[in-house]
Image 1 (cartoon, rainbow, N blue to C red):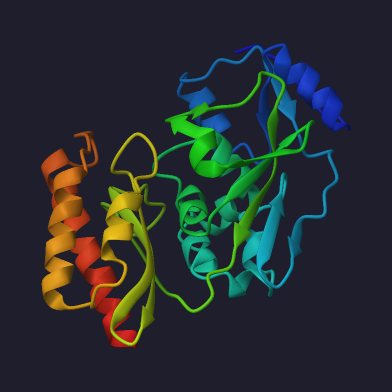
Image 2 (cartoon, rainbow, N blue to C red):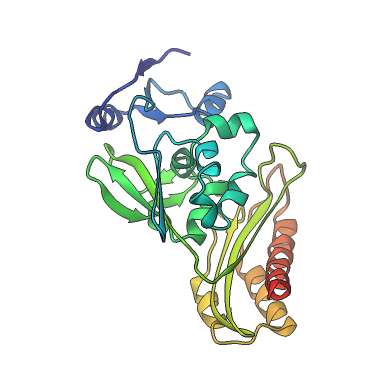
Length: 276
């Protein structure tokens, strides 16, 4: 395999090379695997690591993670630990070696519905800043399918911004065929805000159950104002199960994934009830 390699030092250089068809990488944990498997055969590789960024910026209510910042960088950041369940999710990414090289920005750019960090962005109202224009776009509007991003030819992700969940109890779990280095069969990230036993707000996002992260905001709205009971949990877990339309692949059947969708949601709500 032959390709040209560039390591630009400015955002404008990256933009120009990408517009001409170059493929960006930072840690390379996705790109190099796909190149080895001949899924990707780029003519031009753009190494972004010479771009200096702040790494992680944090305010009381917003966390910004910049390009070239590794999972480990975020996990070790004290402020990031306040943005539950972010660190718990990131600790499920691959091995320590992968977390030391791989980047959250790259995970969004990869646009895989199994992406652990991508799932977190849907729960934490994630937006991306696209260089070189620095325009801001919601993650859910950016990702349209596996490997598909709605942005211009010369645009790329400069940073990802996340909002803190104040007053919520959160839940995260992913299911795979083995414990180590697992790509999920199904995963869920949920947040519930209760006023007594009444659901004030709820956010539920699934990974690996569709072409993108799955979230049904109309069902979330329908739950608001209702008492969190076992009957309600059963009712809405069945509604989610009926709505979700996963595929069968080498990891699991569609039927099994639909069962997981129901069971994971039941577990998330029961967990929330116990914590309160």
